[in-house]
Structures are given as C-alpha cells and as structure tokens.
Length: 275
Length: 281
Image (cartoon, rainbow over all chains, first blue to last red; front, top):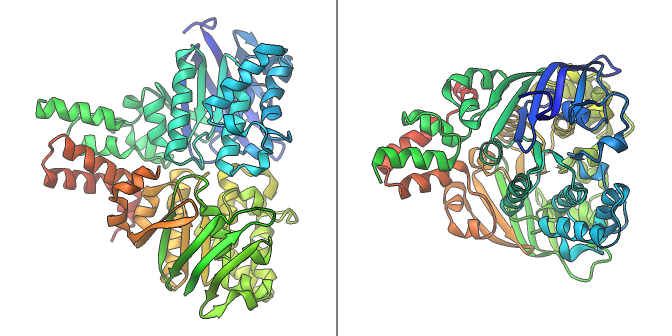
C-alpha cells in the first residue's frame, strides 16, 4: 500500500507517558481506506494509546502519524476530528449533555453541520444505535450499555471517514453486540474505515477483515482472521495470553485447517461431509 | 448463606418497581451466574442482594435480605460491609479517589473493616499476588488502563475476604488472561466458603465457573437451574442471552450432521485452553 492509499499510517511510532511507561515501542501500521481492522492484545499492550494518536489526542514521543497522507504533527485535534471519530471505552468520559439528542448533536454541529443535514445525521445515528425513542432522555438515566451506544451514536453522527471504537461490545448483551456488528457492516458498506479495539475474539473474527495483535507496545501479528487464528500463530497468541475462538480450536481438532468463525467451521465441515 | 425473599424494589423517584418478587438463595461456597438482556434488572438485583439498595441509595424494598440468618435491614453499613461486598461494572465508579497508589487503594477496604495494620498489609499483599498486580502497586490509581482498573477494583474486594460477594460484570474490560486470573481467584474464594453472585454477558466464563445459572427478564427471575441444562434452554436465546460457545457450536455441529460423539470430543478437547491445561494436574 502506498502512502497515498493509506488513510492512516504510523511510522516507528513511540509513546512514552510522563511516568516513564513506554506504551508504544515502534509501531508501523498502514490502514487502507474502507478497511475493517480489529486491534487485539492484552490490557496495557498499547491499543488505546495507539488509537489516541490517530485523532491527535496523544502526540508521538518519536516517529510520526499520517492522516490522509499528511503528517498529523501540528494539526489540531479539532481538524483531525473531521477525519477520525473516536468513541471512548468509558462512555462517561465522553458524555456531558443533558439530553441524548443534544449529546449526539454536539459533534456534527462542531463540524459545521446545520439545519436539515444536522437533524438527518442525528436521526440516522440514533436509529442505528436503537436510541430513537430516547432523544429527550437524560443520558445518565440510561443504563451503562445504552450509554455506550450513545457514545457510539455521537461519533457516527459526525460522519467521519474513519471511525475508531474502543471496546464497543463491552457490557452489551447478544442483541447489543448484533447491533454493533450491523453498524460496523454498514459503515464498511459506505466505504468508511472502521478500527475497533476489542477483547472479543469472536467479534474480531466475524466483523473484521484484518486483525492486528499487539504485545508490549508492538505489533506481533497482522493478517486476516484465518491467518491470525491459524494453528501456527497460536504460540504467538499464547505469548500475549489470547485464545483463538472456539470455532478455530475445533477446526484444528477436527483437522479442518483454520476456521476462525462458526461460519468458516460450518463451511469446512460441509466440504468434509459433502452436503 | 445469602437469601432474598420476595424482593420487590423501586428506586427513589421512580413510579414503578424494577425488581418483582425475587427469590434468590446463595449457599456457602456456591457460585451463581446471573444472565439476562441489558436493562433486565441485573445491576439492580446486584445492588439489592448486596444491601446497598436501599441502605445506601434509598428507594423502597419489600421482601427481605438475610445474611447468614440475620436480616440485613437491621445491620449498620459497616456491619453489612463485613458480610457482603459488591463490585461494580465500571471500575471508575468503585475507585475511592483518595488513594495515591494502587497498594493504598486495595488496602482501604480491609483498613475500613478496622483490621490491624499487619493484617491489612497481609491481605492487601495476598490480593495483589492473586491477581498478579505487583507491577502496578506504586502506580496512581487514576492512571490505569480500563482492564488494570478493573483488576484493582476486584483485588480491593478480595482483600476484604467477604462471606458473600456480588459482582456486576467483573471481567467486562478484561483481556482473556485477566479473565482467567479473576476466574481462578473467584473459584478459590468459593473454596473457602464464600458465596458468589456474578452478573456477566460472558457466558463462557459462567459456564466454567458456576454451578447454577439464574436468568432475569423485566425484573423477574425467569430461569433458575443447573448450569449445563440452563445454558441449553432455548428460552435463553429468546431472552437475548448468547449461549456459551460450547453449547452454540455443539448445536451447529449437530445440524451439520457431525457424529455427536466426534463433536463432543472435539469440543471438549478444544475447550481445554493452554492456560487450563497448565493448571491441570
């Protein structure tokens, strides 16, 4: 991928926090426009630190970040926010408004949306997250899982070409996870780039075309779900205490090759059983 | 033993109750999983089962909570805290905000139980070792990753060595390694006679840990039974609860016509993860 094709690119990115923690230790990552990328790894492996560089919330200690081919250094967060929308892991660090609708309106309004276009962006985001009946509710009257969906709606409404989700499925029930899978799919269908940090290996394998595995501030695996969960990658996964999804483990047990998803396992099985 | 009888609870300022006629019993050493769709009342049930509602947050409770035969209604807050503790979904809710280091944060619980300094330090060290938090002890509790904050919050509870422990999504922000550490710590706590109620969306974790599963919907208990049978109950899927991968894939393999014995063997073998294998004798 050339520099121009990559919507986001980090070059030997290093970040050292003031307390001396070296959270990123030379990360080279290029993400193509429209790609769906899951970032996985242990707690403290640098996932959140990495994505916070993508919209300028954190600045590199060394190396650089390119957004749309241009060096992000010196560009303000407000300017980068028009390209990269980031939904926080903890919604309560993001939510501030008194009503759900005004919370969702804040981002797109600041990007210059007004009138009917603003209202349409808000409505679409509320519908996608299932919050259309809560427009006048105080965000803190919503349960945790719906506050997370609200934080996500606020980012969706901004219509940024890149959407970054920090652990979007945390605290969601099966229906909530399904809703988030649909949101990822529809963002991708619109040609937008989706990056998600997750600990949910099944979500990573089923909703993303590329999985990046981090350990100790570095990328240790990077490939399709079938690559990353293939048996020969297991020792690397184990070194960062990740477990392949059960479908992948069953596939290996049954000698079916790399079957990272239920669907892939079913397909491999039907080839064997011949139906 | 912790027992809720006919518990109906309404938050202060709410017109209607959010829990209805809940009967729930946790025997000593028992680990019970609590599942249900979002906003079914799981977090409220955690608050009521821990006595925080209504003692600390108000509201109206009819029915009773008894702890080891004693009605919770008559207990003072510190007496309640000696018997039952609760861990919240968002570790940031739990953090004291007054401790300068992770060590002090974890020590606050046992210290507030009025234990000696020596005992407080011993319990704090044990909880730290159990969750392998040694590398974080000098860190500022405000500057932790989400998962680290959650482990610290759980260590604070372990250090209190409660008789009963109620956990609302204890592993929501944890990676698989952190989840395994918490799993082992909770299992060993149950081995000392502590009873646990764990609300979780990770049914794989509950499948490994619990002897019983309780499902709640619309503030009422709708299923209550042994783990394997409850997780195979089709009503669970209707509630929006994801069955554990074992049950889900078992069904998928059966539908594909895989010999049930072959499928069972593959699933059982595949379910033994490297970590679990290491821990086995």
